[in-house]
Each structure stands twice: as C-alpha cells, then as structure tokens.
Length: 338
Ligand code: B12
Ligand code: SF4
Ligand code: SF4
Image (cartoon, rainbow, N blue to C red; front, side):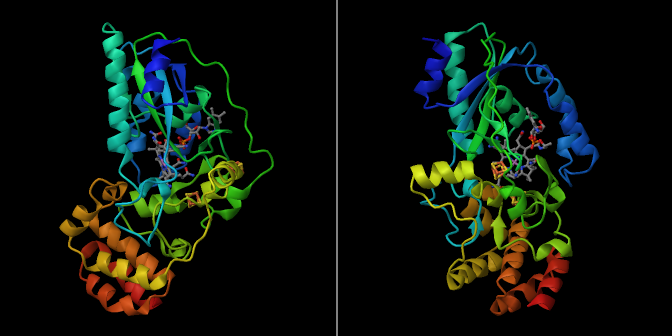
C-alpha cells in the first residue's frame, strides 16, 4: 500500500489525486479572463497571476501537489446564526478556511514525519493557486459549464485543497471526461446571466461576488435580480443534474433551486442585522464564512433582501442607515423602491 495514500485515507480523505507542479494548463485562459475584467474589483487575482504561473514561487523545488476534495453538503448548521436568510450551503457552517486548513496541515505534518527530508505546505483558498486547474489535472472532475469542478460520483458541492511538496509522487494520468453534454441548466437558471459563455463567469454579474466579495454596492440594474440571496449563491450548482442525482436520490436531501422563506421570521432576522452594531455582527458571525464581508456589507445585503421581498415595515430602519457613508446611496434607493 502507498504510505501517502494511507495517510490521506486515515485523515478521512477519499477523493484525491497527484499532479506534477508546472505552469497551469489553463494559465492563458486565466489571463484572458483577467484582461476582460471579469474579475470585477478582485484585484488580488491580478497580483496573484505571477505566482499562479510559477508554483515554485510558493515552495522552492516543489515537484508535486496532492490535490484533495472535501464535501460541504449537507452543511453542519446547528449553530449557524442565520436561520432564514438565503445563505449559500458552503457558508452555512464553520469556516473551511479554519477546519479544512487544519485537516490539511495535520496531513502535511504526518507526511513530514514520514519523509523528514522533504517539504510539505498545505492550502485551501488561501494562496495564489489555480485550484480548479489542479483538481482537473489530478483527475478529480471536469470543469462544468457553471465553471465548478464536478465529479461524476460526488457532484460539485466540495472544496478543493492541496499540499505542495518536494516529494516526487506518481501522478494521476486519468482525466475525468466532460459530462455536461448538451445540458445548459446552470446557464439558464442564472438570474443575472453571469455565465456569459459555457465555463466563463463574469464576476461583475455574479450574485456570489456581490454578496460576499464586493466592497461597493451592486449596480442598480442588478439589484432586482438577486433573488433574495443574502450571502453567496448556489443556483448554478443546485440545478446541476450531477448534484441532483447524488444528493437527492442517494442522500434523500432536497436541493431545491428556489425556496420561499417564512417572511415574518426572515424579517426579524433582517431587522436584527440592520440594527446590530459592527461588534455584534462580528461576534455572531465569528467562525463562519460570513465574517468575510464587513459589517456594513451585511447591512447592504439585508437592504437588498428587504427590497426583494418588499418589506415595507423595514423602511424606518433603512432610513436610519442613510447617514452611514457606505450605505447612503443604497438606502436612498431602497426607500424609493419600498
Ligand atoms: C475568485 C473566486 C470566486 C469568484 C469568481 C468565481 C469564478 N468562477 O471565477 C466568485 C466570488 C464569483 C466565486 C464564487 C464561488 N466560489 Co469561488 N473561488 C474563487 C477563487 C479564490 C479563485 C478562482 C479564480 O481564479 N477564478 C478565475 C477563473 C478564470 O478561474 P476558475 O474559475 O478557477 O476557472 C479555472 C477553470 O475553469 C479552468 N478551466 C476552464 N475551462 C477548462 C477546461 C479544461 C479542460 C481545464 C483543465 C480547465 C478549464 O480554467 C480556469 C483557470 O484555471 C477560488 C480559489 C482558488 N484559489 O482557485 C475559489 C473557488 C473556485 N470557489 C469555490 C466555491 C465553492 C465558490 C461558490 C460555490 C461559493 C458560493 N456558493 O457562493 C461560488 C461558485 C460560483 C461559480 N459558478 O463559480 C471553490 C470551488 C470548488 C469547485 N467544486 O469547483 C474554490 C476552488 C475554493 C475552494 N478552495 O474550494 N469564487
Ligand atoms: S453563483 Fe449564482 S449568480 Fe453566480 S453564476 Fe452561479 S447562478 Fe449565476
Ligand atoms: S447544469 Fe448541466 S451544463 Fe451546467 S455544469 Fe451541470 S451538467 Fe454541466
């Protein structure tokens, strides 16, 4: 038995592959995506380009990467602070940048104990790495028309993590065939037409970008298309037959693309967000991916959801936010809408 595989399996990792570290196959695609400004204001993606192109800049003499996936469905949401707001599945639980990273660090440590002469560093969404490129090359899935890596056996509701190493590993040679076929469900469901072509996402239009990453307010033309999403968006994945197949039929779990929440309870939740102090929001969201957005951006998201559901009774609270610099414009807009 291969000792590296043993360590991975003992850590509960079942889906993994090995690649040699060289210039990513899709580097030119990545650069042309940046040139078209599809990254919106995520300027760090431009700065990361050079390191993404040269994996050895992250770990000198790195030879291989161990690429793994970690499922995030069903979410472990018992302590999750928001019960009604529409939050993407990956974010309805403890932050994977903590627990998945720790799991990867432990694996890296066990590998180091076994191969003391070699170096191992682990990351997930934390370093300039083209993770989907690595996962595809490691044979873990194909890039779907929604741009997510999809596995025939596991769907796409998983994170990708990797361990760079100087160790020379026997690489996976089997590439997963593209199983999208003639399906276009993800492109059709996207409310903002962010999937401008199969496998090309324009972040300027993506709900996930506007509710998680954006440090400004979405353009007015998009504001009525956000479908009540409060944080992230799962639509292009939940309609995917490869997720439906696995999660609905095999795990008896519903992956409905649209749910109508209990509006009274949702209103209470939004009320709390609109009135909470920054410290209260930070405390409530600590340890979850929600902490990525600043407190004012949570209020922006709450305003957008309130307008989506036409919650007129929240108008006085939104009125109050007109005084806050970042929120002034969107609060004025919301009051006109309600
Ligand atoms: C920036 C970013 C975003 C942006 C832009 C997303 C995008 N599609 O570009 C926003 C904020 C919108 C976003 C949203 C989400 N994200 Co995000 N995001 C990232 C991040 C940090 C960088 C991605 C990037 O470089 N984008 C630029 C484009 C050009 O690159 P790319 O999407 O990776 O695409 C590559 C492939 O598509 C490939 N490719 C295209 N065609 C082909 C064909 C072949 C044959 C091959 C080999 C490759 C290939 O080339 C591209 C460049 O390598 C990565 C982490 C990382 N370091 O990679 C996570 C990551 C991609 N995100 C992830 C997740 C979970 C999400 C969300 C599901 C969260 C949510 N529910 O809201 C959504 C999904 C939206 C979607 N349809 O992509 C996971 C994806 C896991 C998976 N199964 O694919 C990642 C890998 C984080 C992680 N460690 O798990 N994200
Ligand atoms: S995450 Fe939502 S908004 Fe973004 S591409 Fe997918 S369906 Fe469209
Ligand atoms: S919904 Fe259809 S086209 Fe989109 S990623 Fe899934 S299989 Fe591919």
